[in-house]
Image (cartoon, rainbow, N blue to C red):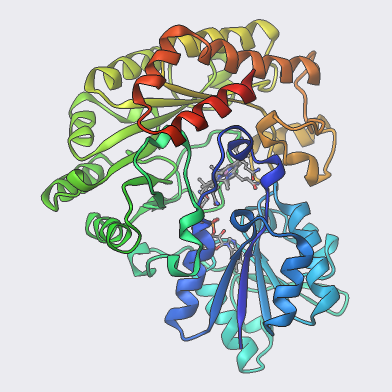
Length: 467
Ligand code: B12
């Protein structure tokens, strides 16, 4: 019984690919594959995004290799692409199709109703469920014995008992990276010059309530032990020659004791001499001692989620930070010598033109090294989506339009805040990027970090895409 797990392609709309190139490992699928391998189920991963292959080529690969079961991961942005791939597969092969990931977890019934080719939706974390699903298929048991799924039987859709999240995530094996085309992943230039760059997901869940977030991994923060994370780093160094690690955790410094232990363990194992690393967190969850320790442990860059340069909007989106905290933390981070990236959003609900301009000015004032300005999209699963849907302010539920490459595609925006228009927001986004990056101080700062011809080319490509 052979399973294929597919990462659908997003390339033509992927902002990182359009502007700077490169893709990242689909860690969710690699975790699922590891769980299957641990239970002796043969599995392969096809990363269509990294490989750049067409729907037809995927369908032919499935049929010529006699897979019995195909799994596909889906976000809202990749939903339409994934559904087309599934259609192409079912045209050629009679396989069981199951899907998982944020979109089908949130809109389970809609997913099954929209695509009749999908047999099963795995809801939430998938490691335990996928193994039970395989057991049921192998032993010809009814799907109602598998917790945490919804499935189709005849014309009806059935939900089974809910599955709780995995308490101790150290029990999950390392992602099966040996099934991924590891040489094709490049990471973003903000991660630095030391290639190859690979990612680790060190913690799951986030207790905060930002209205734009649609995380499906729960509110409870569950993290891997310092030992497990350092073992995984050593594995990435020895097997793949990793030089840079990107922590994909949503809020890296949430538990200060844990981060302190982790940094200490990295230093004890001399990992700080072998790799550099990056992470993302909130401005109110660091202090000087912690930043200094992180720097000593090899932290090169921190991405801070700032979102807006207006306190009124920060409060509306329930961000729970103050603008003064942004300024003081950015100053501190620079003093400690850690590079900074900062995420901003334009077109938040009720945002005026003046407030959008404030955000651009604030980004320059706060002075990070890297920025992104994304146009607000209310993704299903977020509080913002529910609020705007209730007010009838979402223009379309055609999910293809939600793959806007953060506003950089020619697709129309599914939501435009009151009193504003699409063209103005898209123009403003480009203006924001140009105003931020095309300043002598920033150009110089970036050129000083360029260490290779390849990197110079990536910087120039990024700049040309902005102009
Ligand atoms: C890494 C990441 C990225 C990377 C993608 C790298 C990659 N190849 O995965 C990059 C930086 C490119 C990215 C970009 C964006 N992202 Co993103 N990203 C993430 C992040 C932080 C981690 C994903 C991850 O690895 N998770 C770890 C694994 C363990 O979880 P998982 O993937 O969900 O998989 C588990 C389950 O869902 C399930 N499962 C998943 N798939 C399948 C399939 C099967 C068959 C089964 C059985 C089970 C199953 O089992 C897995 C193991 O437990 C998530 C947030 C999060 N906490 O997940 C956001 C997230 C996926 N991103 C999101 C968004 C909105 C974006 C952007 C639009 C942001 C922006 N404004 O630019 C862009 C869009 C890019 C695009 N066009 O698609 C949203 C998606 C919301 C939604 N409704 O779909 C999320 C959930 C963030 C959030 N909290 O709102 N992202």
